[in-house]
Length: 372
Ligand SMILES: Cc1ncc(C[n+]2csc(CCOP(=O)(O)OP(=O)(O)O)c2C)c(N)n1
Image 1 (cartoon, protein in one colour):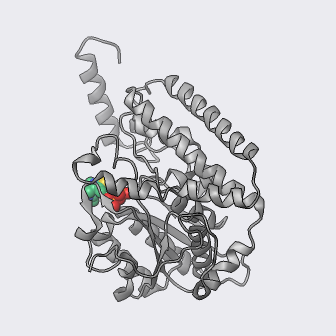
Image 2 (cartoon, helix red, strand yellow):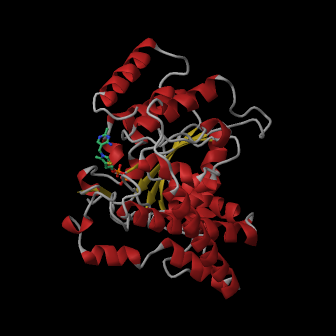
């Protein structure tokens, strides 16, 4: 069996933009009923914002302004939908591609670009956004998330009786990362402690050049079953399914239901990173198939059928151009940080070994005869 073969999945918005809540998924439909038109517009605005940000960042990387770029094009519905399904107390532990989720939680976009230019270490404050730093070591963030969720459980912050106090955790990771032991250990600890965590796997079908089929024999949403973590597959290019299913399972986790896994079946339309050439390992036909299932186009058709007019789409396009020019200018204006900057955030207190390393680096730089 191919792990991406057709298995039941929650889809509310078809690739043609038709909306229907399947009868067997009515529990998720009630989450859509609560949404207002303003919510729908917000979802679209943020998906478009994410796409424009991504395209601009790719251009900046090509101009030598960023060391690397990690595109999320094609994954906006999975990210914006699930990002809005996360509550105001909840904590988010992302991988490195979650620019859309960052947008839904108010992370300043320039801080992502600074990190990929190498002038900060991931400079947003998780205390303010509850969006933790990007995890580059595959699966490590899922262990951090599980540890955090266990702390939440042991601190009695689940099912307190006052919903405003309850909190849960969500962690993002890719199909390739599921092959890491860290993910299996996370499932085990989360299940055994019944901690409040949603494991959100974006199956974008490629781990650089390795297809999902090389990571698993069974559909990924079943990966947690043997550990006691139930799961479901959603159409990851359907922003409404992504929102509703995440919101429901985060609610359940806050009420003590324990861990749950969501597999969002999506597709990475762009390259793995700006250092990758995907034409070496996948076919044009495959990319064309998924481009036709573009999450933005699908939602746009839906909104137009709801009576949303051209004015709105023009306003979104203009806002995108404004964002692009702002980040362009801000990137061009970035200064090279002082040499001691990178030593400052290793420990919260001064540390003799770090001081010694800084001194060594200063001496080394001075040996070239220039200024420090
Ligand atoms: C522990 C570890 N092993 C290997 C790598 C190198 N690496 C970076 S991204 C990647 C593929 C990840 O694929 P997936 O988990 O599907 O996420 P995606 O990049 O597709 O979002 C690999 C192998 C790493 N960062 N960390």
